[in-house]
Length: 179
Image (cartoon, rainbow, N blue to C red; front, side):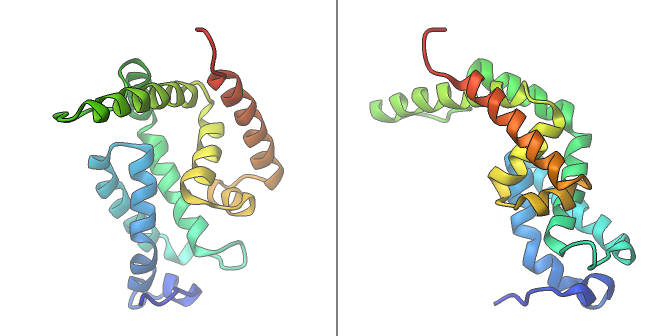
């Protein structure tokens, strides 16, 4: 069982390993959902390297460790945003990559999933970067509005308004019907 890190484990280099052990896999999965899995491992490692180097800046009075790490990861993802947008646009055109299909039903399932993934990817690509960050932090990571606000360094109300705008745009983009 992994010990839950406390504020002291963030600032104490000897105890920082508990922060890594408790959150690395979650941060890697989040990055992997936003970018290619090939990049996720490197960016997750970079997230913790930055956190370790900036551990003296962590203020437990301002928030918890988890949103702080998500904020660092989201900033790194921002650096790769052009790649992310190209990926969403490519998925919108082609659907998810497939491997060697052996069964007819599997092909039907993949075509159906490809249509859904393509539509969703296209809709996500049309959101502003701030709206996309809020949606994906909530959807992929299950962060609360307060945690998203802390992760992105924005006000709670900004999180709520970005999410509201994003929901409206996503609903409009994802309406099923004749295209």
